[in-house]
Length: 89
Image (cartoon, rainbow, N blue to C red; front, side):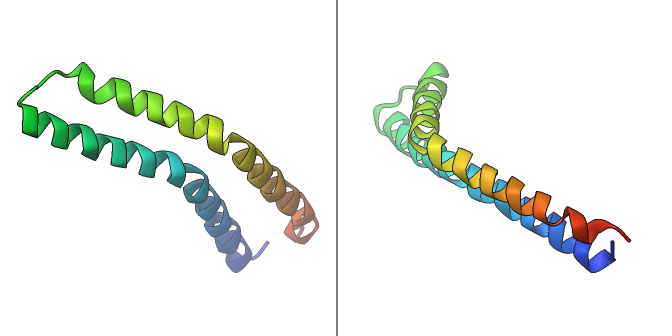
């Protein structure tokens, strides 16, 4: 296995992880921004007000994007298994 092959394999793994995590992170960020704007306008500084909506939104995103995540991971795993023959030196 060459260094270039290993770097390409690592790069594709990191890219896959970022693509899978992106929907949940973006939804959590948007919900957090909305909650913080709500807290700033109403002067409510309750700690649980920030966590509960984010958890609910991320759980909803996991339910919504779950099938896509599974298909994406299966395709990545199959591509990885197909590359095993190239890994022998």
